[in-house]
Length: 400
Figure 1 (cartoon, rainbow, N blue to C red):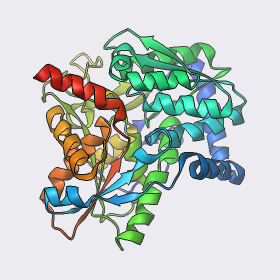
Figure 2: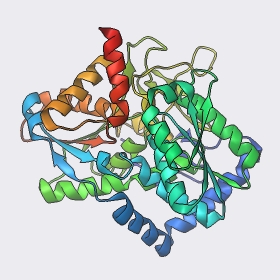
Figure 3: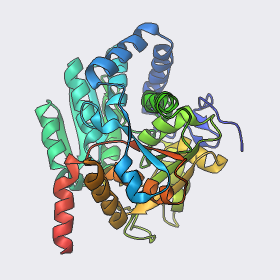
């Protein structure tokens, strides 16, 4: 196993992955952002301001919860949940948007744009913009707008403009495309608050760093509550920000296995899933080189997931590096199994998890059955499932 870099190299690469594949018009903005982020990361005042927001605004640290009844249902390993669903706005996304809002203020910009799939990043961006007084525009695929109506309404209540995207599959990939187009024409006055560990450097590193508070807390809480580190850490992976956030502080702990769970969708057939780390090939998407779902001509493929937040044909370059280096393993969970895991957690623990998080719960339940009762699994419960309740009801009604 190769050694793990804590930062990408000067070209923004994690091994072979990452980099910047963008039009020249965006290079000055990316260089400015990288420079400002590097300075902010070393600035005690910036870090103190971010820590205050985490504590007094978000409500961190989020609990590490022993899911005893779910553990009993599965048999085997003890299952603990890192409760990011209890954050302000209901997911891990706020960890990143507040950090980027502080950077936006530092750069003197007043307009923020973002893409969103499940709507959680959109809500978190709109929340941060309301907190700092920024103009906010959210790009969202029209199919995701239909699936995630409660979050759309929340974004508007928070003062954001939600712009529907009707091109392509009308989902997260297409929302990213439109956000990048906007940024190319407004880069002097606008910051693009990218929502995951994807895109051109410095976004993968920066978003991972903002989200690594999840793993730092989980690691300390494990030592405090369990007396040792977990045997396995599990998280869902679309772009991969919640997984990178919880994985990264454990990377040097070789006794801790890391398992990312992609969207297995309906089947293994192309177009039926969104699992590039399991079935894709290295390629370029949205300014970065990573694993991508693509056809024989190298064109990005359509993908599917029951979860709007995992309905993305690429993944983060650091996840691609962890896969190829062997530090993390990646699997996928299919839609029907995810719905069963959603039900299991709801009925054993009284927790409605987001469909994204339910992918991780699904894989953790499978792994627990293969492990002993002395072993421990920590699952990143990345968000709450209120936003998915109506879509789950619709899917089940159509199925019946």
